[in-house]
Length: 194
Image (cartoon, rainbow, N blue to C red; front, side, top):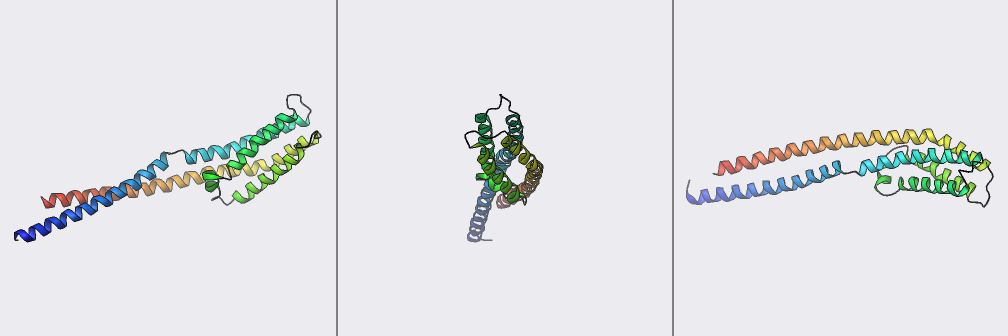
């Protein structure tokens, strides 16, 4: 082989090694971003948020029962505050990353629709100046009727998040294996060129 052929081969090897290195760098960035998502707390926040919907529904039910019983510890302003907190939790479950994640579940439209309707009714019952005590009973009864569906939805969201993370971990593992294989190809190319 003459010098010119060797020089072409060396340039070809360098270009090939450079392309492999660029592809490995891009693959590394993809793996890194997936790992950041995996370690990130977006799913954890979503699961915490839907669990809080259930917890705050229970709190609203309990406070509505106290209001219905005429308990002085639960005046109307505190019941309204509890309703506002619950409204905020439901709203968070419908918007942003949390809403996009939860909307993937088949139960989402039904559960969220029922919660929105419930909140409209709660607001109607306690927004008047002097609601009757039976308003608290109605709020508690309707809340109890929703509780099982909200609980099942929370469990389904947890299960879905776990499945999603398992799929993502498998995807990351495949990319890491590709990255390792590419590294060894690059290393073999460099060694062969020496």
